Length: 86
Image 1 (spheres, rainbow, N blue to C red):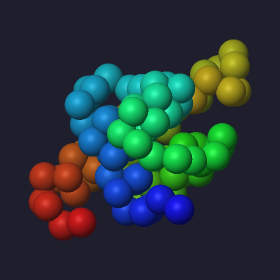
Image 2 (image 1 turned 60 degrees about the vertical axis):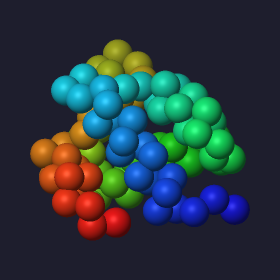
Image 3 (image 1 turned 90 degrees about the vertical axis):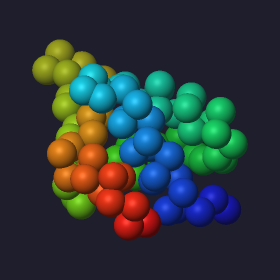
Image 4 (image 1 turned 45 degrees about the vertical axis):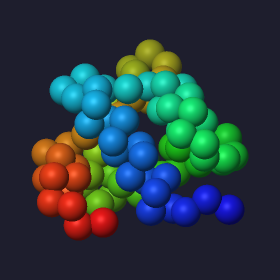
């Protein structure tokens, strides 16, 4: 089982690297796999919803395709990463 804190931080760091752009879920998934994380389909979306609830990411959905989801680091997410409080 993966460490949730490291998995969440990995996603936040991917979003920070892409900032101010947003990333689609398949890109975040590929990055997490390259980082060595093992996860089930749907885990990325669930973690992003958790991070959205903490106001660390912003999620946008396509108006014409509900399955197309993009995530972006929020200002609070940037502050969190810069603070070093993990």
